[in-house]
Image (cartoon, rainbow, N blue to C red):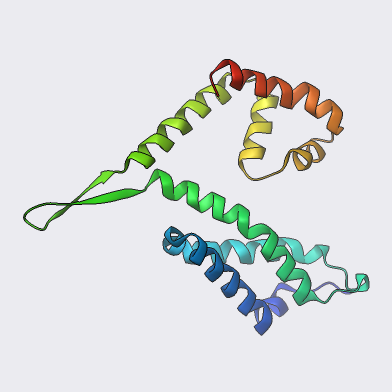
Length: 174
């Protein structure tokens, strides 16, 4: 079986259009992502680079279909990543009588910043292995992906990781 090179993918017109289309669709849905357009495209190309070795042509799909499926699945996590970055830096503009604008944090960004600090305070009280689980989930991994990544059965993972983490958050008012 012959591996697909990244150079081949990076000049493929369909894949180039797919990266642009997926990025544009994300920006249409979340207009604040316009400031992160190039970073999102770079992240998508990084995802393509990491996933190209998984592609096997003998499974019936062509490389373009495979890449488009990967992009469609991963764009959601990128949107969450860049939207959360944007919310911590989000500012609203107040108009002043002299037509100068002064930037002040919006009420929503202050709320999210406080919430993020509260969550981090709770996470920091957890044991190291539970912190690792929290960070993996906050990075966009599902609970089942996190359990697989840690080589644990789902039942054991739920009982010894997820339940204690949830209990700790409940005790702290979340």
